[in-house]
Length: 89
Image (cartoon, rainbow, N blue to C red; front, side, top):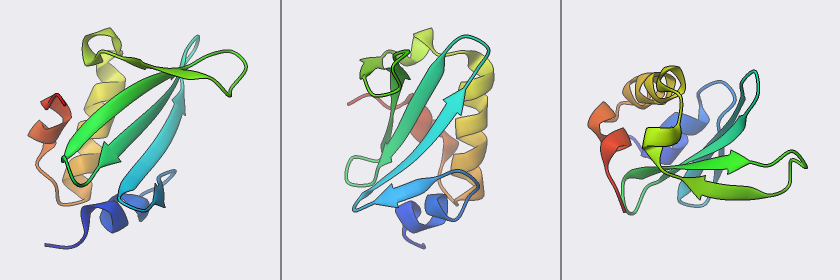
């Protein structure tokens, strides 16, 4: 299986750093930073404050369903099990 961080990094808007891959999404009123961590094979959601610099972790149940679906689709495109998106730390 290819390196999942490299595979996600190859997708549009994803960036990588070490063992993590990250993507940013801005909706109508909220902005999110989403991170995949290879060692734990989990996805974390961060809500970005208005200043664009401060982010706080949020529970996935507070994240809009269309965004979560998009992340699961990206996981599939990277060759990962979309169920990873449900995994908690």
